[in-house]
Amino acid sequence: MGRWMKPEVYPLLGAMTFVTSLCIFQLTRNVFLNPAVRINKSDRNKAVLENYEEGEKYAEHGFRKFLRTRPPEVMPTINNFFSETK
Image 1: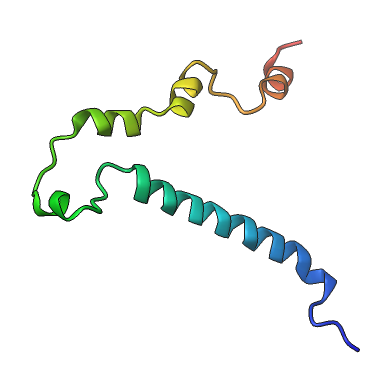
Image 2: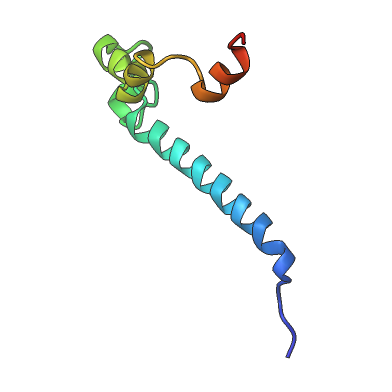
């Protein structure tokens, strides 16, 4: 009996599963939390929604607030090592 999938394909399958799950997460987040997405028929009838507070809450989420307090470096130890003068 032969194998139906080669072991060399496993990393590709893992990467594709990861990317697909990221896409599904982002689409679900936008459908349920984005104030510009209108699911209700009453909201779709309005040309302009007056929901500034909801839009501000969506744009200024907790992760973005946390990143504002952090220095804009990915690896500060490596940056300091290569930028220090000896």
